[in-house]
Image (cartoon, rainbow, N blue to C red):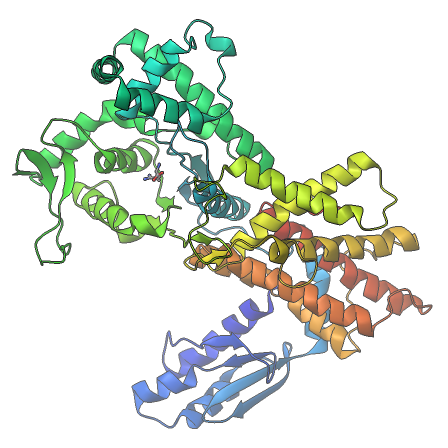
Length: 573
Ligand code: ARG
């Protein structure tokens, strides 16, 4: 059982149960000892007893002899726990023999839908889609690693009135004649031209409006034209996904249009439950607890007064499809924080409609903004939204330029691959290491730095450890060999290695990849401390094997951790 905190928690729980069954031990990592259990304090309040007395009772009842070298009550009633070297060494040995590095498989796997990326077609993906794409992808990887059945859904905006003018413009530029070879270099330009035409040419505007009606009426020829256009847009999005190395493929696309035929069913479900209220010709649901600033009840508009359906109705249909048809037990929406109210309304109505079992079955994993170095929402130099492909390409170029300044024996192909891993890794890590709800500044110099809490720092740390083996022509000891923990830096590194499972768990609990990033950064830093203090390739065979073992588990933890974040860890840099 490699995860030290799990073992401690189990043992402490038994001891706390003797005071009051089910009492939380409140276990924390501590710098006084290895861990601290603070549960005696709230318990003291609850039971009206002195906290130190409770702490003493817990210590007396706790069976920790094989785990701890020292257990001591301190301060008002904290229990300080210092693990024994033997326990740590055995736990690291178990870790080294475990390809999952101590991360258990979920005891009750769920079927999950993760809704992420979701650009609107007809526009280039811009930096506004970066966070959803990266956070969603990391969560999909971590949850999948735990054994959950993860279904990725890319809820693209592929339906609505702009498609009238886009289809007409497609016809004008001849895109319909040769659909196979139809391609748009820049979707934004295509959109802007169509828009200008719409605004200046009344005949074009007329055609466009008629086209919208045909599209909504399901006219087959119109649908074909629309498909050509959507396919071309998706090709652009897929280029971004491939460059980022995220898991999304065309198979994951379930766009707004998909739910179009399902909307009447939503209306009848809501009708049946008596939830629909007519308001100014629109069909609305007023879930309890939602009010506008004036204190008036806030509706979710299911059908507009003109008979059309909008974004909210589509999202209701999506919830229904995901839970009722696909049988998902949990839905995770990786969508910007500005859509919080929208999603809360959707979830509340879905709950009333019986699409969701309980409040926990749909969660909004929101996120903050990406800011420019000027502190404002990031936009391009030219004023429009930066095309994400260009931004990513710039990251790779910058990484390549930085690499050129270093001596390298690697082939130029290999260097190009490393530049890609570094540039993309830097962008991903800068995003993922920021606590989800916080904004962050997109700063090339900071994210590409090889020192500090950055992707490149972790990638270099990993490659450096691998090179110890390659250059020394040495191998790690057989898995399952306990390390010798004589030096404090050896002990500190071993203990840090044991925290991987807890970091993954915290990531899942908070749906926050930043937890894993923080852990990996701490691990790399702890490793540096170890490496500076302890020579690895010493003559003493047992010591050398022990230290190589610690190096090996560290490299594997960094590699697995980075891969769960969707970041490459090249062997050699
Ligand atoms: N396409 C939407 C937008 O760009 C995001 C969709 C997010 N997902 C959802 N199920 N609403 O704002």
